[in-house]
Image 1 (tube, rainbow, N blue to C red):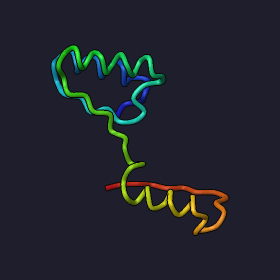
Image 2 (cartoon, rainbow, N blue to C red):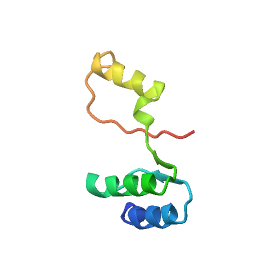
Image 3 (spheres, helix red, strand yellow):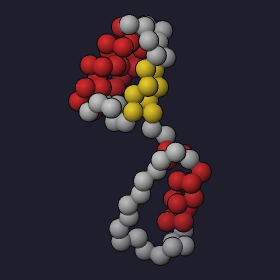
Amino acid sequence: ATPMERHFQDCMAVIQLGKAVLCEKSMAPNHIIANEIIQSAKDANVLFVHGVWSRFFPAMQKVKNLVDSSAIGEIKSARASFCQ
């Protein structure tokens, strides 16, 4: 694992080597840098995957539906961890 501040540098180095990249969240500090990484991968014909999609997992959708419908009452505080 590397801190987000190094993601740009590391992603670009790996893309330049022609290797596939899996970059965990957060990918970049802003959309301009994120777009530069994505465009570089496209230009190099390198697979680039941003690894953060847990909000679409069925369990997360269920939690969102429960909260939105007030089925579990008013939320004052929450903490969650998701691991596979």
